[in-house]
Length: 399
Image 1: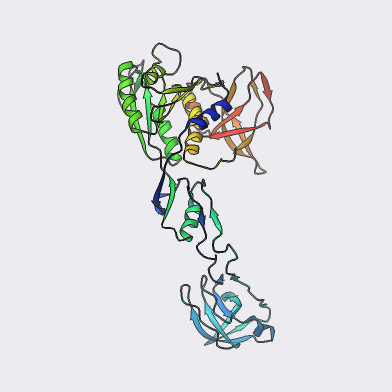
Image 2 (image 1 turned 90 degrees about the vertical axis):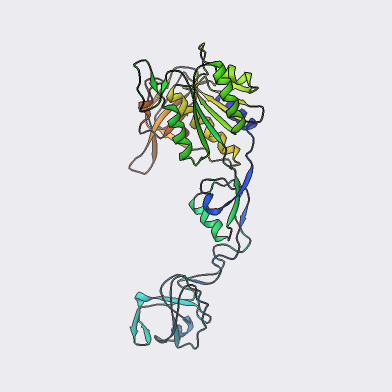
């Protein structure tokens, strides 16, 4: 068996980097950027008014003037006006370009309005450039705003739009097939015999992938029959970038997945990881570069391996920059008696000082998927035997 870190390295070494496609900006949320984005103009591109009020020359106030005639009004989007004289002021709206000859904005709530003039209260102080967002103070034209490898969330999409880009180059979404194996599996809603179980793993995998932004996902269910497995997996390998199988990878006579994959020319990279749960995990690469993650069928093992290996691997294949490793302290002592790495489900809660803690939620074995309700992910604890005290800091992998 290999260690979890060795499994990480092998997955990263063998996954093909996904191709690049150019998409309209509105279709890029959740994608990984594959080009740098630079500022189209200075930001702000002009001296931008930051308050509703009046724009004036602060030197007039410094020289003692408190009353000004209102020359005109200028809205956001209007071409900037020019101040006619120092005794004038221009009514101005938030977001407008500062009129020529003005260097300050007095908020409307600090003004007394009388017909076509305004007066400043004696307590109002006016300084140069107050309530003005100076041109280029955020960034200058040509500045690097986003780097290739950045995941695209709402702020990044807005920045790309602000840079004037109607389309951007991103990693193509992988085509993924989620495949359950097992004669005992019955779909939700269909009649189920006492000796059968519901097909739940696929639904958990699909939900986790879609929550992460993956959209090109197919679903299949294969019986424990070698000719059927070979025939159907051949089609899946020819039509998808990634296969995620659940079940059929342990040591039983009907655990036929490795045998079927070998018959199809899928090269085994590793089989079994020194961890609990999820030890039987299998990973290989098909003749055309298809990545095959074959996860153990017990539902806790399936979800653990998905979060620990599959999702990070897919992120790397999309050209994502190396994410910061999330670490957290455990909220209760844990004793590990075996010599395998342990992946413990946890619920994240914040204490009165705003500190997050990982509260262990121990399962009744790797089949006890009901214990995962309300959990946020798993923490990874080094091999035992050892005792880990409350406050021990370790890695967190979210569902």
